[in-house]
Length: 383
Image (cartoon, rainbow, N blue to C red):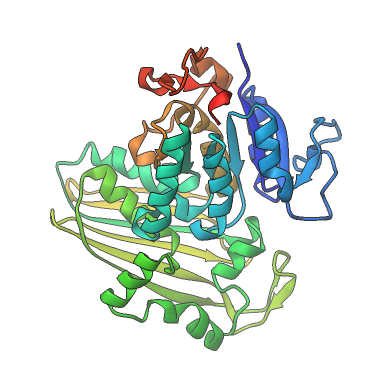
């Protein structure tokens, strides 16, 4: 069988797992890109801390588009930052060249309700070139599909309450800063909390302009509404700082967070719907004290009420495994910016990923019809 050919964009902490997991599932790594000059030119084996060379040199991001134009690539895994607008140039390059992409960017999970302008723009471009762009990761399973599956055994849902925590030390400096880690309380109120101290009309204006900074649960609530057939009527967001009780060392920030300063934040998103179901979700991202750990806690209140609590999930690893398992669905998905609420549930892939894909030779002339038969399109002449 033909191997799936993958490019890794972003060779930081998350690539440690995405590259290894992909290779162990039979995927061929053909390229790796980053902006960190310290690792440019080195073998990608440094990402997975392996002494065995992978034979793929990390190239500068400036060479990314040229590489896609000159090489056969089935999917790009993007593990960079959390905001859709920051990652959009990467997605645009992929879409422009007809190459599928999956991103760990939390906003990319469902950017339709936070940056609809760019979401529509990307969807149009990807449809034109016949590729699929989407966001996946921990939220795909633990904040999304887990909840929708539980909903399948519920007669009536009145309220969905979710709370999930993670250590920002595991994800890199960009994510830590977005959560306000290391700021004073005054700085947090000015730089983070003030964003949501606005009216619904002002917030919608920012969203329409593509200038809104959503918390992770903002997009999760939108995804859940879409998946469960709910119609949002109002959605609000509130951020609350978490305060250090003692001095904490942060290797990611390269500093000591002194007692009384912010270790991170909680972001609470409340969504009211036409159908009467309310979704209240909270994500807690901070630099952990020694006794703290990840937890995922969701309750569906209704008939009947169901609660599921997962303590100490390996959040970074689960994030990356979710992304790699999603490669199969993305290769056969409808072209466009197609979010995972429009795809089957993300399930365990026990075999090499190429065994789940029926490769077909493209016999198209001017227009590609491969996706109409539910197949992955390998017609790279249509990039």
